[in-house]
Image (cartoon, rainbow, N blue to C red):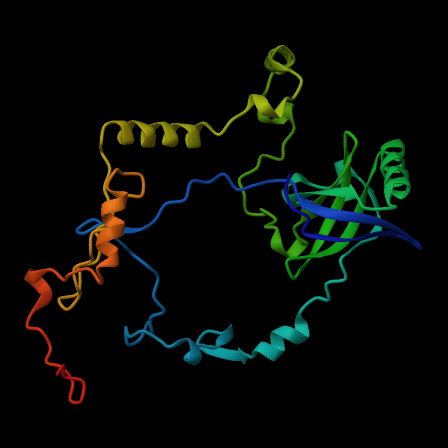
Length: 291
């Protein structure tokens, strides 16, 4: 089970219902690294001045908002702190609506709401009230330092908080080629409509989420496994050793029969340096020469 993001309250008027907010989804996308095909070294991101092509030190980087082409307003850390939403760890219910009135395009990320200590009665009260009235609750909540509009819905016995996109985040699609004529005006016949309806009824089934998988991800993983089995793998090239680096002494495996021998050798003193890389022995420091 995922860890709670926070524990707080669900505010319904003057009623506070203790709840905990938990993630209800996870990102299953495969993570790929950039590599240099010449030596298999990782390729990282650099902060580069696009005008000079030179790296920029972190302390020289500021955030700017371009309000006109080429004109910026610089924002400081204090500006962001002042505008930062106050995280009260509360789900503030703003009102109620019918689910059908919320376009699917507004739904974003789901979270579980679970009853916290002494919150069971209020939790069931809200859940059953939403179920009985056929409504969803519209709410305001702060998650990860960002304020969200959200809808609280019932899923079986669980309250689910689903963040919603704000209206200005959704493209209206006014310029899309979407036929607005009815079926007759567009030339559809009654037989065509009836046949399509019969096909839909025949293909109708109970929605079971586990029946649907990400076939693209599964195919990619299968290809990765086949490449591993065929030996089509590449190892990251180790960094070349420093010319001045000493050859590391060989260490005994603690599970071998030579454990006692290795211990006895260790008692004799530091491991001897490799003659190949040892070089001339340093002269004793003044005052420390043996007599």
